[in-house]
Each structure stands twice: as C-alpha cells, then as structure tokens.
Length: 444
Ligand code: NAD
Image 1 (tube, protein in one colour):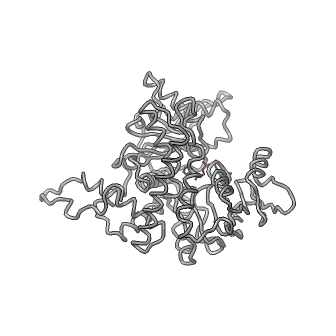
Image 2 (cartoon, rainbow, N blue to C red):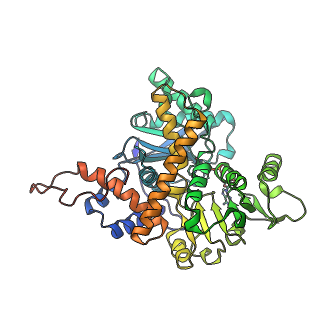
Image 3 (tube, rainbow, N blue to C red):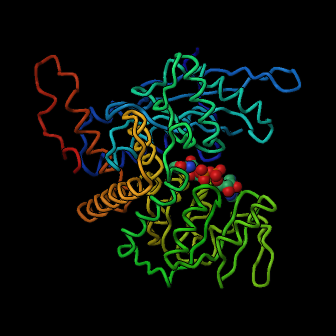
C-alpha cells in the first residue's frame, strides 16, 4: 500500500486543477466561507497501488490502480471504477471531486469517490478481466464497504464487472453484502433501470430546462458525440420526444444525415460492425473521426464520450446553440469561456449526468432494506429528484445571473458548506466558525 504520488502530465493541463477552478469560481461568486474551500481543496484519502495480474499465457503483468475517497461529509463515498489505458491519479482525483459535487447537486446523502486501473481492457480476455476485478477488490478492501465507500461501473466496466467485485468482497468477509457495490445484475440485487439511468436523467434535466435553452423538440437537430451506453440511451429518449438525430459518432468514426438517423439503424450498425460509422445508406455521410461532430451543423450537441473534447482549439467552431455534458468534464475551462462568450448554453455534467448515481443510490437503499424496487418506483423517484435538481440550478442561475455551470456549483457548495460548517473545528480563541450562518440548508 503506497500513498499517491506525482501527477501524470496531460495534454490539457492538470484535470484536477481544471475541476477545482470551477469550485473556486463559484465559491467567489457566492462568498463561500474560506474554511470550506480549505476542506474541499484536498481529497480525504487516495490510495495508489499496483495490481498483479497473471495473464492467460502464464506471464505476470503489473497495472497501476487507484481509489480516491474525496469527501464523506455528506455520507458514504460513491463513485465508479474505470479500466482505461490513460487513467492516472489526477484524473481519478478530479473525477472524485466531480462525484462529490454531483451528489450534492441532486441532494442525495453521498460523498464522492472514484477508482481506476491503468489498463487497456481490449487487451484482456474474460478470465483476465475477472482476475483483475478480483485483484482490485483485494487491493482496496480496506477502503470500500456499504457504509464507507461504494464502487459502481464506469468506462469499460459494467454489471458483470460489478458482479465479480461484489462476489469477491462477499468471499473476503464471509457473507454476501450486495450494498457494497451498485450497478450489479438484477440477479445479484441490481435495480431495474440502472442501465439507462444516466441517459434518462440527462433527458429529464434537458426537458426541464428546454424553455430556458429555447429548444423545441420538433425544431431541434441533435448530434451525439459518444454513442455508447449513455449516449445511446439519451438518443433513444430524444428520438421518442420528437428530436431529430442528425449525427452520431464513437471512437471509430461518425455518420451524419440532416434528414435524420434512427437509433435503430445506429444500433444495427454498431451490433454488426462495432461502430455506428459502419452505417451505409443513401443520404448518410460517413466521417472518419467523430471529432468533426463538435463543429457539426446541429442545434444541440450531446457530449457522451470522455473528458476534454471541447477546448480552446475547437470551441470557436461549435455551431450548436446548446450542449449537454453527459461525460464528465468534456469541456475545458478555456473552452467553456469561449462558448459562454459566443452565447452557447451548456448544461453541466454535475447536473446532467447525475441520473446514474441517483439510481445507484436507490439500488443501495433496496439492498440495505432487503427489498426490491419496481421499475415504476425507480422511474418516478428519478424524475422527481432530477426535476428538483434542474429547478434548483435554473433558479440559482437566475438569482446569481450566472451560467448553469456556475449555478450548479453554487448549489453544490451551499449544500457542502452547510454540512462542513456544522462540524468545523472551533478556533482556539473560542470564536464560533458559525459566525456567518450557512448560506442554505439541506434541500435549498
Ligand atoms: P461507454 O464506454 O459505453 O461509451 C463511450 C462512448 O464514447 C463509446 O461509444 C466510445 O466509442 C466513445 N468514444 C470514446 N472515445 C471517443 C473519442 N475519442 N471520440 C469519439 N467517441 C469516443 O461509456 P458510458 O458508460 O456511456 O460513459 C460515457 C461517459 O459518461 C463517460 O465519460 C462516463 O464517465 C460518463 N458517465 C457515465 C455514467 C454511467 O452511468 N455509465 C454516469 C455518469 C457519467
């Protein structure tokens, strides 16, 4: 067990710095108590280790792995585990900070966490992936637990990975403990609707803010950047509501058609050839790289791939009037600034993609209560929570006269401030750290 070390360099600078700059900016705007920033500027604990993986050919590989519990001030920490060849510690810490803010925006009693293994999962067989998942649980067993830290799927991990992890945890403690991990298969205590929850949550938020964003479904052309789990389910909800999908892409390329693409034909191309870019028919244009969608001719751009997709080099080329961030951190602060100057509305990640963690919370509740939630209960409760969060953020944007991103961070900070100041160490001169009352109580 080693403590986390130096940051890995990134093309767009330090991801954590970029993430924290948003917190600092919002804190300046609403006058957050300095103690709160002192608490929030550093993660509670980060563990870095190396996992040993016996390959199928008998050789031994070593993979860097991390878990960061950023803040548990609002409850047990919660966050996904990703398998990705470029994962690094600063990315994990940034993602854990975003999880902290995300849970606070939707007002669920969780802190934020994240985990990763630096590995290319496409290089691993099923048995190797299973051994790696077991190894991850062994390495981080002292950090996780149903009342302490609860992992979930993220990029390149899924319900099957969570089943392996939950099973291994159960073996270690001598009994099954489903509430230790969410995003499990239904047969192991998973919850109906988890697979589509992030896309559905994004759609509910978009629908709640449509008037403010001046989007009418029948007049709105949409491009989906990242037609994976989240992008695909968002596309499905948009299609059902009457939006026209005019572009979709993934890591192998993209397709566009101003007359419209159906989710069904995109699915078929992806199933048959591994990429939506394989779709071939009259009126469909194929693009070698999905990055062309960033400057594509559309009204709404859905970002559902990875971080740093829009930056100072391409933000000026965006034609969409509105963007919804379903990926975490897909726009750099510099890109954001340019979009804001150009009047492009951005629905921020910490609000837009919170549907996944919200339904994970329902899964955790049902596991602890030994109950099974119905799909209807999940659907209704998700709608209520996401609409309330969208309304809180929309109202705060009006109150402070700021873009939605700053408003979302202001909502999160007010919630975190109330909890942090309630327990802050009292100064030795006896002055109460509560000299100024917390800005807003729970639910505000
Ligand atoms: P996924 O792996 O199912 O889908 C990602 C998609 O993005 C794939 O289609 C992939 O081909 C595409 N992609 C990757 N790199 C690309 C590139 N450079 N250019 C174009 N396309 C590229 O993952 P997912 O679960 O859909 O997650 C997508 C994003 O949403 C991630 O950033 C994730 O952190 C975020 N997110 C996911 C959830 C969830 O519940 N799954 C919740 C919150 C946030």
